[in-house]
Image 1 (cartoon, one colour):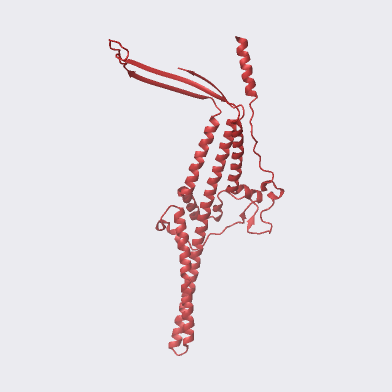
Image 2: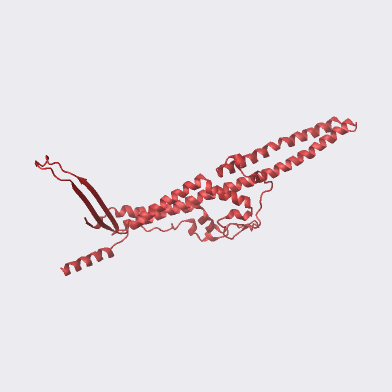
Length: 329
């Protein structure tokens, strides 16, 4: 008996030792741009003083050193629906990875039931009444699937790569929202500054029109000077509307990104009349850092890794599966 058990254990150990993973192992394609020797070259080769080869920080909008802009960005990231949707998609993908990872472990199960009933004596052709009975049932089961061909491991690889792709999608949503907030905030500040300059020019031209009218009334001017000054006034007044429309459109965009109504924006946003400026050169890194920073490229690379692992899952499904189990009740 001992020899049989020992032989069984040796056979089981041999089967476990022979476990392999079918399907291709994922590798970054050799012709990928990131694999090229010039991928680490400087991004800007024109010696532009406005940019720097230093890596770009994650909170790059803080380079403007504007407290109001920082508050708008944080509020947009907290309230934007696209960011929330991408976040919940990431949570779902991570939970899928957890389930695929736990599938390689021993599974325990338990079940139980309790009932109280009475059988019909007539159905059993008995004259006496059958007493009421209490029926109880309980069971415990243990199961483990031998991953002989790496199906479970490949499935975990695929789920992990899909979770990474969802994380890249979340980064893409965050980057898009932050970029739109910064762009529209700067556009609103620039429009306010341009509007202020245009109103100042209009005031100066209005004064020249008043001077031309007084000279005409005093006999020292002429109608041509008055008409020319009036034309300049009207031309400058017509330039105010595009700046007002540009500012209003930027404020509406900010309100939409913050999930607010246009009238609910902080007063300081509309009052901004000077756009913040970078106090240092813009860090852009090298070409390789740019490729790694782009979430769409990261997502595509992770989806390729997930598809490669799925090939292993499909290949392993063509081989037999062995599951060890025991139950008691």
